Every structure is written in C-alpha cells, then in structure tokens.
Amino acid sequence: RLMLLLMRFRVVLIFLLVVFSFFEVIHAERVELDGVFYELSEEAKTASVVAGYESYVDTIVIPEKVTYNEQEYVVTAIGDNAFYKCNDLKHVTIPNTVTSIGEGAFYQCWWLKEIQIPNSVVTVGANAFRYCSGLTSITIPNSVTTIGYNAFNHCESLHSVTILSSEIELGES
Image 1 (cartoon, one colour):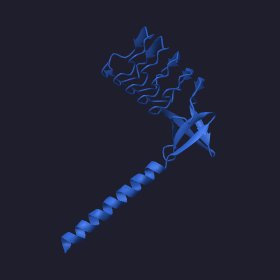
Image 2 (cartoon, one colour):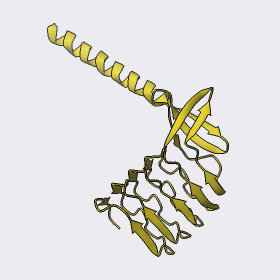
Image 3 (cartoon, one colour):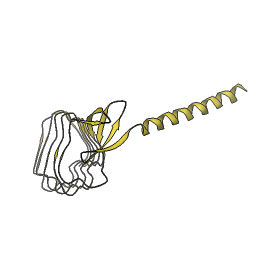
Image 4 (spheres, one colour):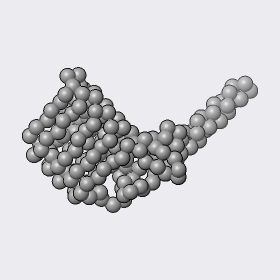
C-alpha cells in the first residue's frame, strides 16, 4: 500500500514538473519591433533575435535594448537560424550586449558583406556563417571562447580571418 502511494506521488510529481516546464517555455513571447523579430524573456528581461516571417533585407541594426508593453529588454542573443537564407541581407550591426550567435544564425546569407562581431560575444554557433559567400574578412574578438563546427564553411570570398584570442575552442571545418 505504501509502495502504491509512493508510485502515485512520483507520477503526480513528474506531471507537475512537465506542466511547469511547459509554462516556462510558453512564458517567452515572440514579437516584431521595427522590422526585427524577438523572443522576449519576461523573467530575465532579455531578448533574442529570432527568425522572421519575411526575409530580412539590406541592412539590419540590432539595438542594445528593445521596449515592449512599457518593459525594457536587453538584446543578448542572435538565435538559431535567425537570419537563415536572408539572401538580400548585406550588413548587420550587432550591439555589445549580445553574448551568443546561434547555430545557423546567418546560414546561406549569400550577399552578407559586412558584420562586426562585438567584444561581448562568447560563442559562435555551428554553421553560423556557412555559405556567406559575400564575406571577405572577419575579426573574431578575444571574448569568443567557442566557434562551432562549420561556422565559416563555404565562405568562398573569405580571405582574411583575424582571431584575437589565443585560447579558443574550434569546431570541425
């Protein structure tokens, strides 16, 4: 009888953990502000740039902070696939508040010519700039500790890569 009670307690506990985990996931809100899509974290008051419904074009300036419903959020990440296949994107300005560039963030941005990674970025995800054929040079600041695999794979015009850190973990390719 005690075993049955403990088993039911475990089931209820697992159910509650799943429900609360789901609540945390849906607690983030997705919004469009000035033509850029963000996922906002209410708890942390942070924002991540996420993929838009339409392709981003020409020049994007990501601000340090965004305001939504009278709340201010610090932009701390460029999410996975945020600019995926934005073929007409040419220039991106990333603020010093961003600490990570997600996997495939700029994947197949064929005409991306200029991007400056700020000294606040710690990680560059796998495939982050893969197939960015327009990039000719890039500087990796000393704040970056990890560059994921294939991050710059198939960047045919990339002739100059400057890595300012002597201690960096590189993925394959």
